[in-house]
Structures are given as C-alpha cells and as structure tokens.
Image (cartoon, rainbow, N blue to C red; front, side, top):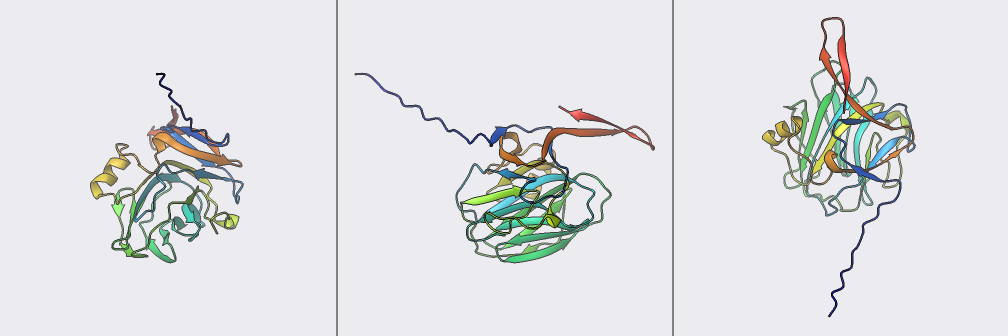
Length: 235
C-alpha cells in the first residue's frame, strides 16, 4: 500500500511580507491617509477579552497622531491609542474612550505599552516603563476575531481611514501584541527585548507597507560629549 502525503502551502499575497525586523524601523516620512501606513496581520484570530500592545515611537510632531488602530466589522475603535499632544494620550476600547496625561519628555524614543482587561475594564498605560493612572473602559466587551490593524493612522471604519491630520510622521519599531495583560515584570522584559508578542511579534512580523513608508536600520546613538553624538545603523 502506498502512503500518500499531501503538503499544503500557505501562500501570502505578494504585497505581504513576513520577517524578523529586529534592529529595524518603519519610517513614516510624510502626512497621508490610506496611502502611507503599515497594515499588520495577527497570528491569532480568536475573539479577545484581554489585550496588550507595546511599541517604540520617535516623532517631533506637536499635533495629535495615531500610533495603533485596531478595527473590526462591528467597532471602528475596538482598540486604539494615539498621542493627543506630547504629554497626553488617548485610548479607546469600543465606544468608550479616555485621556491619560503623562510626564513631558524631551524629544527621544518612547516605549509605550497599553493593556486592557475585559473582566474589569481596566486600561493601563506605560510610557518608558512608568505606569500612569488607570482608567476603566468597556467592561465585558469582546474584540471580534476578524480585525484590521494599522500603524500610523486611525481607522474611521473597518475599511476606511481618518483624515491625514491624525497621520503619524516619524519612526515606529518593536511592535508586539498579546492576548493577555502584561505584568509589571513583563513590561520590563519587553523593554529589554526579552519578551515577544504572541498575536503580533516584531521578530516574525506579517505586514504590508503602503505609500511612502520605508523600512530602515534603527540608529543607535552614543554620547560623544555635550555638543554632538555618534549614531550608527543597528544591523
């Protein structure tokens, strides 16, 4: 008897890529709408009752801009956060929203984590490892498994986009997402690069770049004195 083995290959559309982006960044060079963003494809598509998202961002914008936007067919703001101003963040879960004020930081990279737990509705915002006053949003809500996730823009609907005034200009890297709430110890591991997402992972990111967005090496800068610093690509 012959044993027949069938091999099934998962083929992604040509516009999608999957790779380890360690040491790299997305650069969003200009304002734009749907023409200038990055779309992410999660590896887990079940409904979510707990969410954690972390990323690094670097921008000199003084206006508001979107960082992470997750929409579903039922909710355009299923899980969204953006910077309203340099020290004010906006977080939305479904139809409820909150503003969280943070310290005023000098122009530099910011490590941002946002967590949400449907059981309690508690939302936590961490910036550079510091937690800010917690809010409560959409207790009992469940995020549908069919999602549309975008970096650098906010979704006005499952298939639409908001005006370019909220588009991000700057650099984003180290994007991770989990289907559970990170602990303070987890946050520190993420910051040090020792913990990766199980829904979205920068170490194995499935993404599509649109428009003028670039993928470039991340620059690591070492102080060279009070006047200047030396920056080299991180390959």
